Each structure stands twice: as structure tokens, then as C-alpha cells.
Amino acid sequence: MKILLTGAAGFIGAHVARLLLARGDEVVGIDNLNAYYDPQLKHDRLALLQGQSGFRFQQMDVADRSAIPALFAQEKFDRVVHLAAQAGVRHSLVDPHAYIDSNLVGFTNILEGCRHHGVQHLVYASSSSVYGGNTQMPFSEHHGVDHPVSLYAATKKANELMAHTYSHLFDLPTTGLRFFTVYGPWGRPDMALFLFTRAILAGEPIQVFNHGKMVRDFTYIDDIAEGVVRTLDHVPTANPAYDRSQADPAASHAPYRVFNIGNHQPVQLMDFIAAIERHTGREAIKQLRDIQPGDVPATYADVSELQAWTGFTPATSVDEGVRRFVEWYRGYYKV
Image 1: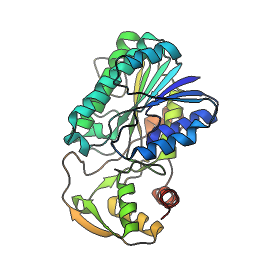
Image 2 (image 1 turned 30 degrees about the vertical axis):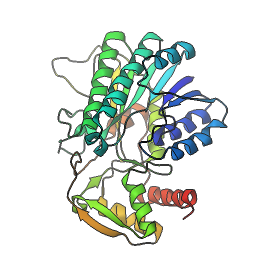
Image 3 (image 1 turned 120 degrees about the vertical axis):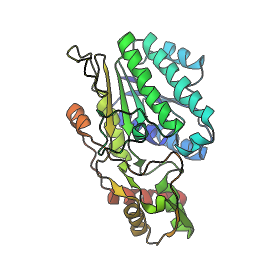
């Protein structure tokens, strides 16, 4: 297939690209290569892809209302994997307009491109953040997600609503994937594993929020990438048996689905830090802090719907995933 992959230089995007290329798909990757974090890391991810047969890259912003339609018209994609977004819960308190431009305007451009050019299936990144203030665990796609606690989360919920509208109005098959705390080699420098590993190896203190009483469903990058590709291959269809009188957020009369992708093995933050200490061979200097605005104390994914739909369940242990990350980090930064 010929696939548009947005956010191709990103953490998840680069791993998804490798899987698609390995099975023989043609991948056209786009990314704006912004400076939200060190662009060199993005260029180095791309360098691993650009020598591979079937991969082409264009620097492009999904919010560009002239470039994106032209790209769709020229390339005639079979399917689209949309991972480009302004990421980060905390940064959305600082620069909200970046989230509107990328996550809302950009997503509209992608939806319009799919609508007007016969795309067979749009798979897009949502987030566990949509569960917001929910406390019922594990988080299920059948739960309501009407109380976001950050603008980032609100834009991801909006993406799901926008996708449903296009599935309903234009019969565009769409699948949203709610990622749960993705980590692993080539990860983002603003995420906990990267920040903690760098500080611990440098002998610097780490900031532990909510006094360490955080629980996260840490999900290894290879499992995330596999989940993306598996769902890309399973195109949703309209469900005429859907009962509109008993609305279910996980289903629809339209060709629309949403799925959690998480390790379904929530881990205490202190245990996560212990794994980093174990594989770096260093003890962390911990500074306990209050929970930050926009953060939630716990996440936990119910992945039964993903397993039923694709036959796949994430399974990489945190200990193994952290070991692989530390090994990559030491090699990449030569520490």
C-alpha cells in the first residue's frame, strides 16, 4: 500500500515507519521538524529511514492549508497514519495556540484530504489523556470521556469527535488509538524515562511529582508500533445493528472505532524509577513535588477491545523496556 505517515520524524512515527517499510509498503513521511524538543533527535531518526527502499520524506506542517491538499492530490494515498501533533500535557498550559494549530487545524486538513481523495482508512493518534478526571479503572473505551483536565486532552477528544463526524457524513473509515505513556529507545526528551535517565547518569536530582504516588500504564514503543500497524490493516465498517437509543462511546453506526493501546500492567512511579536505577547502576536523588496541573494520578488500560479486533495485546515488561532504553541512551549519548 501507499501510506501517508504524518509525524514521521517523531518517536512513534519513526518506529511505525520501520514496520511498514519492512513489510513492503510505500511510505511518504511528513513532519515539520519543530523545536519543541531537540530537532537533532528527529533528524537522526529520519536518517535511519531515508536509506530504506520505499521511503520518501517531505518537511511539511499538517496545519498548512495549501500544502496538505496538494500533497493528497499528487500522491493518491491508499491509507493514512496520522501521528503528527503538538504533544505534551504540561506545555499546553504554556502555549495553547500550538495545540489548536497542530491538533485541530492540522487534523481538519488531514480529514479533508482523506475525504476528497478516496483514502481507504485513517488511523490517528488519540491519547489516554482523554480519560481526564475519570477514576474508574481500568479505563475502557466504553467509559465516557467528557472531563479533560488539560487542553492537550481536550484536543485529542476533539479529534475523536471530528473523526466520527467524517465517518458518519462521508463514510470515511477512521480508527483512533489512545496511547498510554509510551516509552523506549529514541523516546521524547520531555518524558519521564528520558529525564530521569539523563539526571541519574549525570548525578543530578530528579523531580518526583505527586510525592511518587503516581501510577502509569507504561507501554513499550514496539508494542505501540505493532498496534498501529495491526489496526491499520483492520478497516472498520458501518454497523447497522448499532442501537442509537443506548449510546456506546466505543461503537457507532458509522465506520468508526477507538481503541486503547496500553500495557494493561500499571506500575507505581517509584517502581519505574527503581528499574532505571537497576539498569543504570546508579541511585536516584529524589526531590518530591506536588502533582502538576493537568496531570492525573493514575492510568490503566483495558485492552480487551484491541485484542478482540486485532488479536494483539502489548506485553513487553517495564523491566525489559527500561533496560533497552538505558542501553540505547548510553550508546546514543556515549555516557
